[in-house]
Image (cartoon, rainbow, N blue to C red; front, side):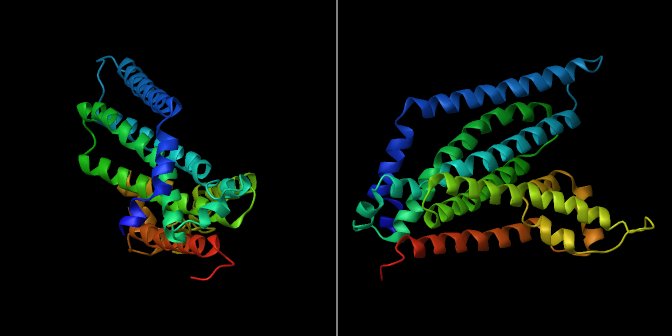
Amino acid sequence: MRNLMVNPVLNKEFKLRFRTVKSFLGILFYLITLGIIIVGFIFMQSMSNNQGYVRPSQSREMFMMLSFLQLALVLFITPGLTAGVISSERERQTLNILLTTTESSTSIILSKLVSSVSFLLLLIVASLPLYSIVFLYGGISPGQVLTMLGLYVFTILVYGSLGVLFSTLLRKTIVSIVTTYGVTMFLAGGTAFLTIILMSLNQGFNGSPVVNPAPYFVAMFNPPVVLYSFFVPDFMAHFTKTTGIEFPLWAAFIICNTVIFIAAVLFSIKKLRPNMKG
């Protein structure tokens, strides 16, 4: 277990990613951008009413906006960080050298995955103090912040494992990146679009609601829909009524995406050394 968590591959990747000025400048500008968005939102909300204060409901809207903004960041950056971790080694002709070391395929794949998503995890953790501004105006609870953080970490690992999988299967980095972004767009955007269409079909031709479980089986793959269900309980109640499935959507999301994560990691480990035994 120690060899899986602390090994030369992981140490090398951490040094390459975090010993550069660009990494810290990226974190700085990201936090400055989020801070400007928060201050600008507070200023516009305070100017929109005569009393000049921000109501708890408006603070909740700001929290939702930041949450979806960071989720979009996760879905946009994760494929770019992970889709070239193995294929780039192959293009530089250093993969064969890496495979001749004493490191196992499991150690190499997990080290590449952890090191790739670590910078994005650092961005998420570094932005948490900015949410204290939201707590000043009320409208949200610490439990909601922890739930949001857990969803981010889980989503990063799942989509990061898909990037590592395609990087292992495909020889060209550009092809791997395009494929990973295509799958990410389908799982994050395509399933949301299908969920909206299927829920509209649940109304029936005469306007009366029709029970149809199809939207549930599509939405359980979609992170934005699950995040929205955390913020709007009325949506989840309506969704349960129209689909006829009372099993929590977030639980189905965790189960199906855990299966995707495990399958992607295991398949990557198997295909890293396709012509070697043991």
